[in-house]
Length: 193
Image (cartoon, rainbow, N blue to C red):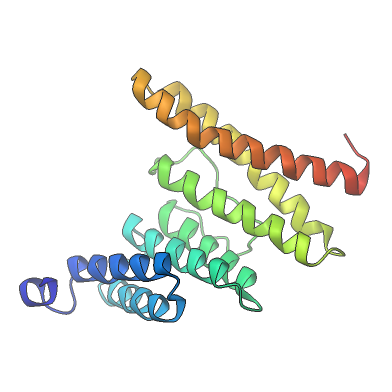
């Protein structure tokens, strides 16, 4: 329907491909999900919308797809896509190194940043766990979780509604739980406080 209404090269069509990719990923059809996500990204690039929240969404979903697919090199590809998502989302952040994180000072959708950073930190931690001799991945995960904790605190202070604070509490529980796990792993590995 979107193709008939908007044509094959519109932001709305890209969102349609993104949504189909998400549905296929959730069903476990990672190969076809990748095709739809790639098409959505291609449209965004043709429209020169590389730096937009919807483009960040595509990269984020591509990262989730790579991470959940579980193939060799999937974590590395996922980290690259999460970094591209951050670059698309955060103005003036262009660092392609997967251990680099943006400043929290810029104005951008904080809830999307939270999702991307959570996925990135988890992938960094998993990268360490699969390659035990590479502790820098664990340090990277710890640093990302530390930034996430700062972001959570800023977001919590900005919410006025009690119901949203309760909803947000569920998300923050996961952030702090994972951050503590990363800190405990790092402590066990290094003995540092």
